[in-house]
Length: 309
Image (cartoon, rainbow, N blue to C red; front, side, top):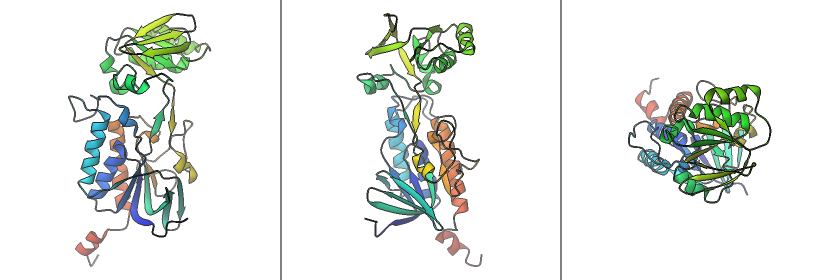
């Protein structure tokens, strides 16, 4: 049954991770009417402690960062609703979003839906991530693995490429392929030049204080840190419902103002084809929120201040 009383707002923000919450603060301070709908699955919740987040020299956990960003947005009157947008349409007046029996009408829509990392099927994976034995972002926390025994797990060419990056931090870096195919000539040369040990194909692992990886040659290898590079699932379905352009990885393509190929539909954060970092997501949010505000009709307070305009 259709919602008889749909909410009507200037902008609907889908997702309340670092990108979505930053945009929420900006648009709230711009005196815009907004709705924020969040499924509660931000990728940032996996972060045990980040020392790569600007302004937190002693580190901050993902959940703590989300709590601070949420509190900041709510202090300016924002209301974050738990739920999931299931369908997004558009008409001459803007966008119509539906989910959970509710409907929102919005002049603009800002997608901050993120991606979902593919992780190894290991018992206690959440605990392993929380303890830093399994890490999901070499850019964020490669420094924290300095001089450790590091392994990169993934398709052979991708594993070698990421292992070469991690040689910045440690001399003991291995690549563990998730298949039996041979590395390309370029990747094999990179492994040799970077002194990366390429081990047998992955068969399984157990994680506690360290991770012990079993390979197809019957050997076991102990590591302090494992970086899986198994890909991710971009949550770009809503954008694709409207025909927005995506790249070969299914991440959304945007212009310099974070607008997609659909007029009035914006995307920010990890869902965008860019470097997946909190600092980048926050920058996306500032750019998109300011552009959305500038493209919307003048708000009532502005009209009152300039009646002759």
